[in-house]
Image (cartoon, protein in one colour):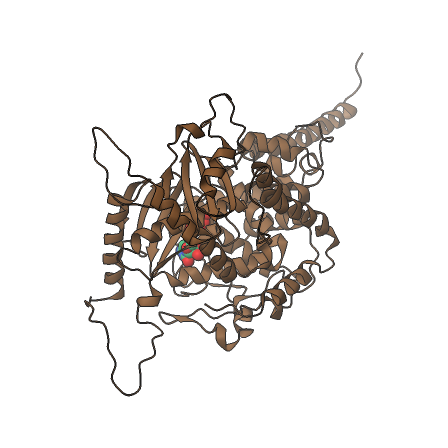
Amino acid sequence: MCIGGSKQELSVSLCRLHMRGRVVLVRSLQKADTFLQRSIGTDVAAAQAEAPPRDGSDEKDGCKSLHALQVERQEQAERSVLINCQSRTNEKKFLKYLSNHGDIKKYFFYESYGLYAVVEFAKRENVASLLEGAVIPSVSHESTVPFKSRLLSLRNLSLVDLSNQQSGLQCQPQTTIPINEFIQRLSKEESIDQQITSLTEAYQLTEENSRLRFLVCSLLKDIAAAYFPECTIKPFGSSVNGFGKLGCDLDMFLDLDGISGRNVKMPKSGLSLEYQMKRANSERAVTQSILSVIGECVDQFGPGCVGVQKILNARCPLVRFAHQPSGFQCDLTANNRVAMKSTELLYLYGQLDPRVRSLVFTVRCWARAHGVTSSIPGAWISNFSLTVMVLFFLQKRSIPIIPTLDHLRDLAGPADKSVIEGNDCTFVSDFSKIQLKSNTETLEQLLCEFFEFYATFPFSRMSLNIRKGKEQNKPEVAPLHIQNPFETSLNVSKNVNATQLDRFVALCQESSWLLQQRETNTPRGGANMTTAWGLATLLLPSQVAGIKSRKKRRREPASERIKGLLESLKNKNQPKTG
Ligand code: CTP
Ligand code: MG
């Protein structure tokens, strides 16, 4: 899809949107900015003490359209390699060795079953030169599959610094900090708004993690390109929609649009040639056969790809596997253009107002902490459903924070028109056309209201519809009905059973009650105190689950008081003895 509006226009309009006099948000935004700069700049810069100069292209992702971001990241990934290093690799010698093949634009180290380096060269030729110099591993008892890729191992012993036990290499974290540690950190914040911002900062994907995701797509593309040289593999879902948490799965889309015959203009007259191609019964059958073959290649030839499962009979056929060097759980799909559209839509909503991402992050973390969501597929509410629920809630504020999808469709220009398999997927891509209402609610208010909203939502009768920004009568029987924004006859949360929905509602009731208690919503005394309060309390399963008994305890003193009063009245009316 072509996202209109120049990059500059986009930046200006976004900055304008972000600056809209929301004084309460300024601090949070400043913190978020500092974080972004830290994760993009200083942390990496530390590892780059002797590193090549930065190219200045690390503009904050927040001001780019998803399309621009994807193009840039894909291009970076094509110029990058992934190298398994020895734990005491000498950084300086390592860089010097690699620089023989060309300028290094960026690099970082991380740990995942071993030490790895992502190295981005200035040109693709540099990578070709590096690969030319690489050797085939010599193995004594086994054989190797002679598939060469950009996943390499560093074997030169002289690059290992034996004089120094500690290599001093700075690794970029690819996983989140343990929840216990995090809860302590949250408890030191001064307000619930700050806690929410801090949670978002700590759990969102880092610059490096995002690069690694695109690199894995690019490595996979090299496998698929053996059959389909013009293909691309694009990440979608939470890896790119702005709502991804460190450790989330990597959803990939094998894009064959360039060779699918879609959008092809037939010559009106004269001679022309066309390819002879095998025919299949349906598009689904083609997708299944392509994924079956690529899945087999990934399984048999893909370095680092393990546990490959071909799930071809699912509504959306996919190949699932683990990419060990990155630690990502991967889902590869094909012909999944509607999901790409919903990814773009979520990205757009997340960019419109910083509270959207923060609230989605908080609700996702809260749900995970209480087991309302899970990484294992099942009758749980999915993160995607939960995100749509947050968006719906934000549309339903008395002053809506985000517009409806119908409104975004009405703002669309001719270039935005998109119909996929008969579904209208059109919505505006030029952010500057979107006028937001001036809602000034704080994150704390919104979180509290979110719980209240869903604690009392008439789930038994109504369906959530972000296209209209309104609840509507359920078109079919399902405990939870959330209309798919583009494939409107589908229910996004079809998998959810009544037990899981009841748990969600009960947790919303309890969390809403907790947030209204003074003992929960008041800071517990500054930087050295670690007693959980505010959001930290909400993330502790024992605290929320314990509410029912606490509510009961609260009632007890009242009943005790009444009992005492009755006793005293009785005593008063009784003749004094003695
Ligand atoms: N999707 C969809 N309809 C669904 C489920 C998923 O359109 N019923 C699309 C959404 O764009 C979603 C993407 O597929 O973002 C990937 O799905 P999934 O991995 O389940 O959700 P994520 O948003 O990636 O969240 P998570 O971090 O849990 O992976
Ligand atoms: Mg996902």
